[in-house]
Structure formats: C-alpha cells, structure tokens
Length: 118
Image (cartoon, rainbow, N blue to C red):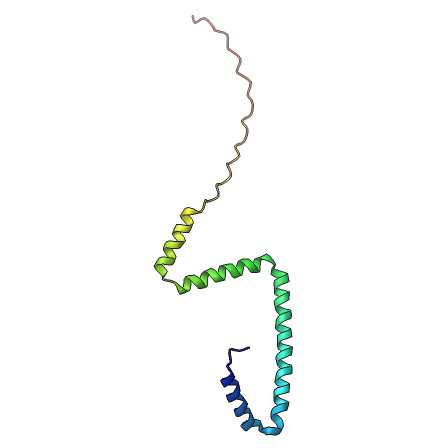
C-alpha cells in the first residue's frame, strides 16, 4: 500500500496501542480503513475524469515523461548523443512546395510597322 513492510505495521500497531489504548485502537483502525476506502474512491474517480478529458494526450504525456525520466538517470553526454543520433536517422518531414501564382496569359504585342527614316 504505502511501501510498509510487516515490521513497520507491527511497530505502528504497538505505538497506536500505547497512544490510544486497547479500547480505542479497534475503533481507530476501523475509521482509518473507512477513510482510506473513501480516499481511494475519490482518487479513482479523479483519475478516470482526467483520462476521459485528456484522452490520447495523456498517453503522449506519459511517454514524454518516461523519456525525460530515463534521460535524467543516464549520463548527459550519452543522452545528448543518442538524441542527436535519433534526429539524424529519423526522416524529417519535407515542407510543402510553395504555390506560385499563375502568370496571367498575355497576348503577344502587335508588330509595329516599320517607318522609313527621312
């Protein structure tokens, strides 16, 4: 649950027995169990609501965060070289060719009659 081992739970039980006494300890344990169940329900509902609102963006965010965490744990030099290598090997999208406006069709200029020079 919270990463507690059996020994930790026994120590917490003994401390609770000293603080609360034998009469109130079962009531406190029952209250803690109910409260934990309610909080888990709230957390589960919140998770489902976030998943439904974010949809595919949540998966993309998880992938990005996983990549960042793995980079954080590795040697920065090897992470940078791996990133550069990945950029060099992945094909980059080509930009769309620019649309040139069509040149208006022009009529050929009429020939001028030759005039005699005087």
